[in-house]
Image (cartoon, rainbow, N blue to C red; front, side):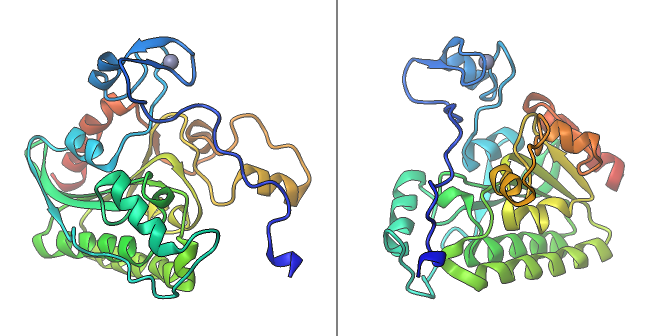
Length: 279
Ligand SMILES: [Zn+2]
Protein backbone atom coordinates (compact mmCIF):
# COMPACT_ATOMS: atom_id res chain seq x y z
CA UNK A 1 0.00 0.00 0.00
CA UNK A 2 1.53 3.28 -1.11
CA UNK A 3 0.40 5.33 1.88
CA UNK A 4 2.12 2.91 4.17
CA UNK A 5 5.51 3.55 2.59
CA UNK A 6 7.68 6.63 2.81
CA UNK A 7 7.58 8.04 -0.72
CA UNK A 8 9.57 11.20 -0.03
CA UNK A 9 13.29 11.13 0.60
CA UNK A 10 14.17 9.88 4.08
CA UNK A 11 15.13 12.40 6.75
CA UNK A 12 18.68 13.53 6.12
CA UNK A 13 21.21 13.29 8.94
CA UNK A 14 22.97 16.38 10.30
CA UNK A 15 25.66 17.38 7.82
CA UNK A 16 28.33 17.88 10.46
CA UNK A 17 30.07 14.90 12.02
CA UNK A 18 28.76 15.00 15.55
CA UNK A 19 31.09 12.53 17.22
CA UNK A 20 34.82 13.00 17.58
CA UNK A 21 36.12 10.93 14.64
CA UNK A 22 39.12 8.60 14.77
CA UNK A 23 42.55 9.87 13.74
CA UNK A 24 45.13 12.32 15.01
CA UNK A 25 43.33 15.44 13.82
CA UNK A 26 39.64 16.22 13.76
CA UNK A 27 37.69 18.95 12.08
CA UNK A 28 35.10 20.74 14.18
CA UNK A 29 31.69 20.35 12.55
CA UNK A 30 30.71 23.85 13.59
CA UNK A 31 33.69 26.24 13.20
CA UNK A 32 35.61 23.96 10.74
CA UNK A 33 38.79 24.43 12.75
CA UNK A 34 41.31 21.56 12.49
CA UNK A 35 41.95 20.35 16.03
CA UNK A 36 44.35 17.97 17.69
CA UNK A 37 42.16 15.04 18.73
CA UNK A 38 43.77 14.71 22.16
CA UNK A 39 42.97 18.36 22.95
CA UNK A 40 39.32 17.78 22.10
CA UNK A 41 39.09 14.65 24.26
CA UNK A 42 40.84 16.42 27.14
CA UNK A 43 38.22 19.13 26.82
CA UNK A 44 35.40 16.56 27.35
CA UNK A 45 34.79 16.43 23.58
CA UNK A 46 33.92 20.12 23.43
CA UNK A 47 35.59 22.18 20.66
CA UNK A 48 38.23 24.39 22.38
CA UNK A 49 37.65 27.11 19.77
CA UNK A 50 33.86 27.43 19.48
CA UNK A 51 32.49 25.18 22.28
CA UNK A 52 30.66 22.89 19.85
CA UNK A 53 29.64 19.79 21.80
CA UNK A 54 30.59 16.58 20.02
CA UNK A 55 28.36 13.62 20.78
CA UNK A 56 29.90 11.20 23.30
CA UNK A 57 29.21 7.57 24.15
CA UNK A 58 27.32 6.41 27.22
CA UNK A 59 30.50 5.09 28.84
CA UNK A 60 32.41 8.32 28.20
CA UNK A 61 29.49 10.16 29.78
CA UNK A 62 29.57 7.99 32.91
CA UNK A 63 33.36 8.33 33.23
CA UNK A 64 32.90 12.07 33.00
CA UNK A 65 30.17 12.30 35.64
CA UNK A 66 31.37 9.86 38.30
CA UNK A 67 34.28 10.63 40.64
CA UNK A 68 36.03 7.34 39.97
CA UNK A 69 35.04 3.75 39.29
CA UNK A 70 31.36 2.98 38.79
CA UNK A 71 29.36 -0.21 38.82
CA UNK A 72 27.21 -1.23 35.88
CA UNK A 73 23.79 -2.82 36.44
CA UNK A 74 21.47 -4.91 34.27
CA UNK A 75 24.08 -5.27 31.57
CA UNK A 76 22.69 -8.62 30.46
CA UNK A 77 19.20 -7.40 29.46
CA UNK A 78 18.61 -7.95 25.73
CA UNK A 79 15.65 -7.49 23.44
CA UNK A 80 13.84 -10.69 22.49
CA UNK A 81 12.64 -9.15 19.19
CA UNK A 82 9.02 -9.82 20.25
CA UNK A 83 7.51 -8.99 16.84
CA UNK A 84 10.13 -10.76 14.73
CA UNK A 85 10.31 -7.41 12.99
CA UNK A 86 12.04 -6.62 9.73
CA UNK A 87 12.07 -3.53 7.51
CA UNK A 88 14.97 -3.15 5.11
CA UNK A 89 16.92 -5.46 7.44
CA UNK A 90 15.81 -7.84 10.19
CA UNK A 91 15.69 -6.17 13.61
CA UNK A 92 17.77 -9.03 15.08
CA UNK A 93 20.56 -8.05 12.67
CA UNK A 94 20.35 -4.41 13.76
CA UNK A 95 20.66 -5.54 17.37
CA UNK A 96 23.78 -7.54 16.54
CA UNK A 97 25.28 -4.60 14.61
CA UNK A 98 24.56 -2.26 17.54
CA UNK A 99 26.29 -4.62 19.93
CA UNK A 100 29.35 -4.92 17.70
CA UNK A 101 29.56 -1.16 17.30
CA UNK A 102 29.12 -0.09 20.90
CA UNK A 103 29.93 -2.94 23.27
CA UNK A 104 26.44 -2.41 24.71
CA UNK A 105 23.54 -4.87 24.50
CA UNK A 106 21.01 -2.03 24.22
CA UNK A 107 20.83 1.74 24.09
CA UNK A 108 21.32 2.58 27.77
CA UNK A 109 24.06 1.97 30.32
CA UNK A 110 22.82 1.88 33.89
CA UNK A 111 25.28 2.60 36.68
CA UNK A 112 25.76 3.53 40.32
CA UNK A 113 28.77 5.39 41.63
CA UNK A 114 29.82 8.48 43.52
CA UNK A 115 29.26 11.94 42.12
CA UNK A 116 30.83 14.69 44.17
CA UNK A 117 31.11 12.15 47.00
CA UNK A 118 27.39 11.30 46.92
CA UNK A 119 26.20 7.86 45.79
CA UNK A 120 24.08 8.47 42.71
CA UNK A 121 22.19 6.37 40.16
CA UNK A 122 22.96 7.40 36.58
CA UNK A 123 21.53 6.04 33.35
CA UNK A 124 23.23 7.19 30.13
CA UNK A 125 21.81 6.58 26.68
CA UNK A 126 23.97 5.30 23.81
CA UNK A 127 23.06 6.98 20.53
CA UNK A 128 25.25 4.68 18.45
CA UNK A 129 22.96 1.76 19.38
CA UNK A 130 20.03 2.04 16.94
CA UNK A 131 19.82 5.81 17.36
CA UNK A 132 19.53 5.56 21.13
CA UNK A 133 15.98 4.36 20.64
CA UNK A 134 13.87 3.28 23.59
CA UNK A 135 12.53 -0.25 23.41
CA UNK A 136 11.57 -2.69 26.13
CA UNK A 137 15.15 -3.02 27.41
CA UNK A 138 15.79 0.72 27.74
CA UNK A 139 12.38 1.11 29.41
CA UNK A 140 13.10 -1.66 31.87
CA UNK A 141 16.59 -0.37 32.62
CA UNK A 142 15.37 3.17 33.33
CA UNK A 143 12.60 1.75 35.54
CA UNK A 144 15.13 -0.34 37.45
CA UNK A 145 17.35 2.74 37.86
CA UNK A 146 14.38 4.47 39.49
CA UNK A 147 13.63 1.45 41.68
CA UNK A 148 17.27 1.26 42.73
CA UNK A 149 17.19 4.95 43.66
CA UNK A 150 14.01 4.33 45.68
CA UNK A 151 15.40 1.32 47.47
CA UNK A 152 18.68 2.95 48.47
CA UNK A 153 17.25 6.48 48.76
CA UNK A 154 19.62 7.86 46.14
CA UNK A 155 19.27 10.73 43.67
CA UNK A 156 18.83 9.89 39.99
CA UNK A 157 20.28 11.30 36.76
CA UNK A 158 19.26 10.13 33.30
CA UNK A 159 21.26 11.47 30.35
CA UNK A 160 19.12 11.28 27.23
CA UNK A 161 20.45 11.02 23.69
CA UNK A 162 17.77 9.41 21.62
CA UNK A 163 15.70 9.48 18.48
CA UNK A 164 12.65 8.32 20.46
CA UNK A 165 10.72 5.09 20.83
CA UNK A 166 12.00 2.03 18.96
CA UNK A 167 9.56 1.32 16.17
CA UNK A 168 10.86 -2.24 15.76
CA UNK A 169 9.18 -3.11 19.04
CA UNK A 170 5.94 -1.35 18.15
CA UNK A 171 3.52 -0.54 20.91
CA UNK A 172 5.66 -2.36 23.47
CA UNK A 173 8.15 0.48 23.29
CA UNK A 174 5.39 3.07 23.66
CA UNK A 175 4.25 1.31 26.83
CA UNK A 176 7.65 2.09 28.37
CA UNK A 177 6.67 5.76 28.46
CA UNK A 178 3.83 5.05 30.87
CA UNK A 179 5.80 2.53 32.90
CA UNK A 180 8.72 4.92 33.46
CA UNK A 181 6.43 7.87 34.20
CA UNK A 182 4.60 5.84 36.85
CA UNK A 183 7.90 4.83 38.46
CA UNK A 184 9.04 8.46 38.46
CA UNK A 185 5.85 9.42 40.26
CA UNK A 186 6.83 7.01 43.05
CA UNK A 187 10.28 8.60 43.18
CA UNK A 188 8.61 11.98 43.50
CA UNK A 189 6.39 10.75 46.36
CA UNK A 190 9.51 9.54 48.14
CA UNK A 191 10.96 13.08 47.73
CA UNK A 192 14.02 11.83 45.88
CA UNK A 193 15.30 14.15 43.16
CA UNK A 194 15.54 13.25 39.48
CA UNK A 195 17.61 15.40 37.15
CA UNK A 196 17.11 14.90 33.44
CA UNK A 197 20.03 15.84 31.19
CA UNK A 198 19.03 16.39 27.57
CA UNK A 199 21.80 16.12 24.99
CA UNK A 200 21.88 16.30 21.21
CA UNK A 201 19.48 14.88 20.08
CA UNK A 202 16.58 14.13 22.42
CA UNK A 203 13.38 13.58 20.48
CA UNK A 204 10.20 11.55 20.12
CA UNK A 205 8.91 9.28 22.87
CA UNK A 206 11.90 9.94 25.11
CA UNK A 207 11.17 13.68 25.15
CA UNK A 208 7.50 12.83 25.61
CA UNK A 209 8.20 10.87 28.79
CA UNK A 210 11.12 10.88 31.19
CA UNK A 211 13.41 13.44 29.51
CA UNK A 212 10.94 16.22 30.35
CA UNK A 213 9.90 14.89 33.77
CA UNK A 214 12.98 15.91 35.73
CA UNK A 215 12.72 17.95 38.89
CA UNK A 216 15.35 19.84 36.96
CA UNK A 217 15.61 19.56 33.18
CA UNK A 218 19.15 20.41 32.13
CA UNK A 219 20.24 20.67 28.49
CA UNK A 220 23.62 20.83 26.81
CA UNK A 221 24.14 23.87 24.53
CA UNK A 222 22.85 23.62 20.98
CA UNK A 223 21.12 20.26 21.49
CA UNK A 224 18.18 19.37 19.26
CA UNK A 225 15.26 18.73 21.61
CA UNK A 226 11.72 18.13 20.45
CA UNK A 227 8.98 15.65 19.74
CA UNK A 228 8.50 15.61 15.96
CA UNK A 229 11.39 16.72 13.76
CA UNK A 230 11.40 20.25 12.28
CA UNK A 231 10.73 18.97 8.74
CA UNK A 232 7.60 17.12 9.79
CA UNK A 233 6.32 20.19 11.65
CA UNK A 234 7.00 22.48 8.68
CA UNK A 235 5.11 20.13 6.39
CA UNK A 236 2.20 19.92 8.79
CA UNK A 237 1.73 23.61 9.59
CA UNK A 238 3.04 24.81 6.18
CA UNK A 239 5.12 27.53 7.77
CA UNK A 240 8.82 28.19 8.05
CA UNK A 241 10.06 27.60 11.58
CA UNK A 242 11.99 30.33 13.40
CA UNK A 243 15.79 30.25 13.66
CA UNK A 244 17.11 27.96 16.37
CA UNK A 245 13.72 26.28 16.82
CA UNK A 246 14.01 23.11 18.96
CA UNK A 247 17.49 23.98 20.16
CA UNK A 248 18.31 24.15 23.89
CA UNK A 249 18.61 27.95 24.02
CA UNK A 250 15.24 28.46 22.28
CA UNK A 251 13.56 25.99 24.63
CA UNK A 252 15.07 27.73 27.65
CA UNK A 253 13.72 31.06 26.43
CA UNK A 254 10.27 29.53 26.06
CA UNK A 255 10.24 27.85 29.45
CA UNK A 256 10.50 24.24 28.28
CA UNK A 257 13.73 23.50 30.13
CA UNK A 258 15.31 24.92 33.28
CA UNK A 259 18.93 25.54 32.42
CA UNK A 260 21.49 25.18 29.62
CA UNK A 261 24.84 24.00 30.92
CA UNK A 262 28.17 23.65 29.14
CA UNK A 263 29.42 20.05 29.40
CA UNK A 264 32.56 21.24 31.22
CA UNK A 265 30.33 22.64 33.98
CA UNK A 266 27.78 19.83 33.97
CA UNK A 267 29.08 17.66 36.78
CA UNK A 268 29.60 20.65 39.07
CA UNK A 269 26.07 21.84 38.34
CA UNK A 270 24.53 18.43 39.06
CA UNK A 271 26.46 18.04 42.31
CA UNK A 272 25.39 21.52 43.45
CA UNK A 273 21.78 20.85 42.51
CA UNK A 274 21.67 17.67 44.57
CA UNK A 275 23.14 19.60 47.50
CA UNK A 276 20.31 22.09 47.22
CA UNK A 277 17.63 19.44 46.71
CA UNK A 278 18.79 16.93 49.33
CA UNK A 279 20.90 18.94 51.77
ZN1 LIG B 1 34.58 24.46 16.77
